[in-house]
Image (cartoon, rainbow, N blue to C red; front, side):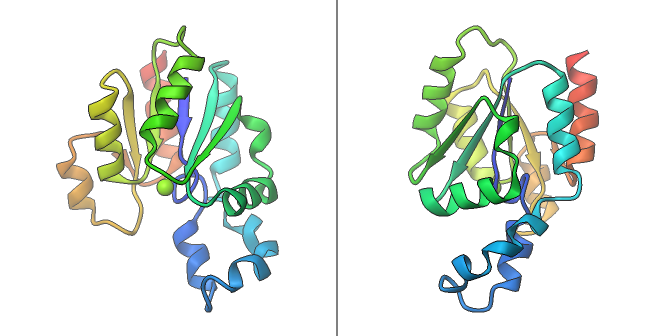
Length: 165
Ligand SMILES: [Mg+2]
């Protein structure tokens, strides 16, 4: 099973924010540009995960309407068994997700934020973290986290492929 983050993991939030000059007023005005900011390999990555026949869950932190809008416009909702958006810490959502999928043994947690992922793994040590590097943090910090980290979804796909065979 895969629990995947949205911003800066599947979607180039960092890049998108740079085209917005007047936050937050521009966010809704610029909404038609949203679909251009999926990472180029996001769809093929989600197709790959789907072919593993394991549940895929989206877990996104942020304001509900805005997150939903981004997820809708990018057209990726169809890949997920469920979509969880939370304005609070992700721990509560993870515990709900794990309750929904008690039969799952290997649970991958794919995220860009180092500290958030560390906290989740402390709470749920059976989860297998995979970090996708975001330009917000230097590579050194990813290295120091001692969790597997990659610069692209293509590399994450190769890693997952190796791990699940
Ligand atoms: Mg993120």
